[in-house]
Length: 503
Image (cartoon, rainbow, N blue to C red; front, side):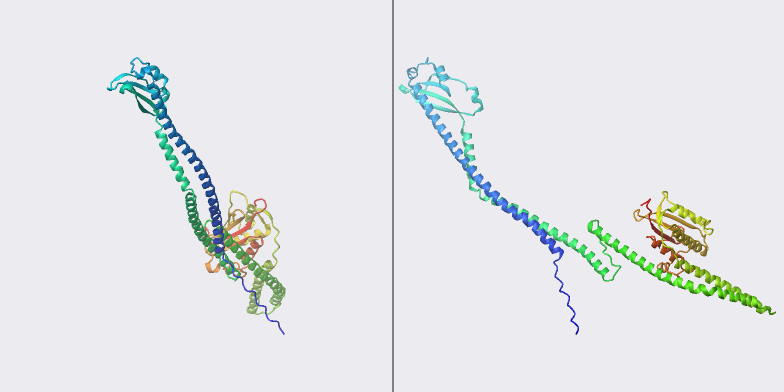
């Protein structure tokens, strides 16, 4: 009895990143807001208590100072009255003696600036006055006029100079009123400040949360594009890409993600190509073995048939000779095909080492077919690649020979131009091989490197396949440029890693 299939566990409902960011922003904004409200309340209470105590102390001092001002006013009035009474009791002043020493009296009495004796008819019998002392110039001065009666209806007129304290007294009253008002509103003042601060912080918090939610929505939507692309890739849609735009870190992440997918896709295609070439190599080895063995007996049998005829029939003799030539020619063609099969099936392993690329390309001139057709356009600086010299020369020879054939087939000069330059940010070198041929049609680009696919009437279709395999086994690649070469024909681009001397 078979056990029932286990049901997959239910998928947990996840909280979106946008909601998490919004909650985090809310906590970030509200925490200092609440803490600030508490601190403001405590600071307000401390300040209010301190202000109240200070105001109370100042109010008490001001009240005592105000009382002192009033007491000084009353004391001054009483003192002036006492001076008038004392002077009126002098016999010479009471008798209205015009020779009385009024000057000495002015000097003796502080604050007295003018004295006069007036009879009962109002006539001034004698009078004296003096200027104010210099030290009184910084004070405002008011006059206090005191008239004291003398015997017989006469009058003693005294004029005292008194510092003007009235403005100071009024200023003191106003200050005390301000202190009383501050003490009265001491509880409302901190509350108003706290409320204003909390309102300002609340508005700033709302704006911060709104901007944070908007920013999180933008960020999460762009992250969603990465997640969607990753899910499509895992679902088998290998051409899916994130396609993020911008200049920020997420855009850089998206570009790196897409570049990684492009690299993976290119590596997948290269691996598939090498697998196909490996399968073709096995087939080529077997075909070379199976085809080569019967060729020699067939050739010997035909040659024996031709040489064994001793008859007089010239027509038959000529037929045998023509047949022998045809068989010889076809066997030679089969031998060339077998040699090509053997070449594909017996490629040596790559033994890479640092090579001067200029020297390798210069040695192509040793090939008689390329000696007069090859033109080299090297860069100013030497470039060192890491490659197998034998295989690299074979790769470039195949490309150059194809270029010569393509140019000649199109009725153009069969010259080939080879150049190279650094690529991939200085991590590799791109070797270009340009010809004067008709180029490669767009529909043939994807299959041009497949074994036994050729555009030439006499080609086997293995040269480009072997060249691409050599490039891939060096850690590089071989492609056809999408745009025509400057020569008007096709441009093949070989990418190879730099050697130790240039890395």
